[in-house]
Length: 275
Length: 314
Image (cartoon, rainbow over all chains, first blue to last red):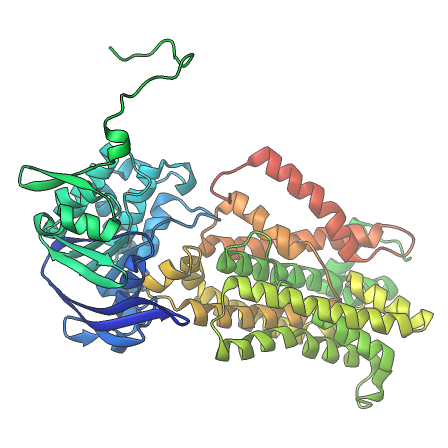
């Protein structure tokens, strides 16, 4: 699969959000989009799957303009996992994931669709949740169910809006590792928005750093996560250490870094398990 | 009021079916008065409940019902104008049909406004609810104005139309609303998978191949059409469209594949029960709209407290 974004621009009313974004992403990989709040990360992925229409420029998937592809056919090529799940009327996990088969569904396909749903639940190791209700699950399980719904669309490109935002460090690593592995096993171009630069740098093949609507930097994690880029885009001083060929960011704040951390008087807890 | 027990009604009905009528007067009351009312109660209940289930699922709002777009207030305004003016506007219809036609026409005004609005601006669930509320206030204000200037007799007619009643139903009443409801109901069931996907939110629905804007416009048109088709005969029967889908959700969950038929069954049975109670209450019976609210509310709270099935809603 090949995604070509050619000079897209988008704005809400007269406020420009994306300015001349050009990108050519080819082959299975995990591609992370990073950048401060409000620089247009979600807007960019919404332009890829036509939730938003750019004011200027084009988006092409495998040589076809997305505007020329029917919505149903586009849903077979591009999956989307939103930032948060809607659960006003929660369904069971199976029914939630089965929604993702909508673009492929026919009147005779239910058995096949259910097989695909259960295979995906097994792949993500959440088969035991199948009959549970969506609103009974933890944040980490929610995230996996939403990921499963995106995967059963069997897309060539999967877009994820902050898939690890509500997760603890173990689940952040687990979900991102799964995404990285799936990109290779299922031959998918996975595009993920992330605010956790270290997790993104640890698992991504490619990173894009957005700033003020432009692509500020693009390349391997070690090329994007640099002291200079972090200062320029986030206005934060940092140290970068390299571990196992992957950059790792340490935030610096001169005012606080030299202070000893003192427990305020009278603050204590009993029965701690820490040794 | 002519007294007939349940056993009497059953016997008279069986005699009618077998062609062995022993009491023509009772036969006429059961077959031509009570039976069409009961049949229409089931149809109206089913239509309002399915309409409510579609609106709640599609707009992702547990407070939505088939009247959310202002269908009932439009119908009330149409009927009120017809009651005030009589059949002077359309002399070729009698008073009853004049009311039905005016109520049907006016009840579709809000959805027409939403459709016109959608040509120029993007429609969202919130905008639809707000437009519906705005239309409801406008229509209510005009009805109030009519009521201020109306005579006592007209006032009482408008009031009785407002609370909703099945008492005027005859066999002639049923074919048109039944035909429209079946037509809309079949199309809604055909679209149930899209309505289900809409529960995931508009962006998610879009990414799963469902056009949210088109789905909302098509489904609110169908719901308005079938609701208008029954409400123009009965007046505003409240509560069924709001509560029956929630009761159905407690038993079958939120998946529209099961929810829509279950809502139809619960809505139909609920209004039939409310109608039975309304018929035997007071010397001349009570309006079914009053009874449906009086029995519906405690029943709903009881089921809510007792069952608390988590899959139903949050």
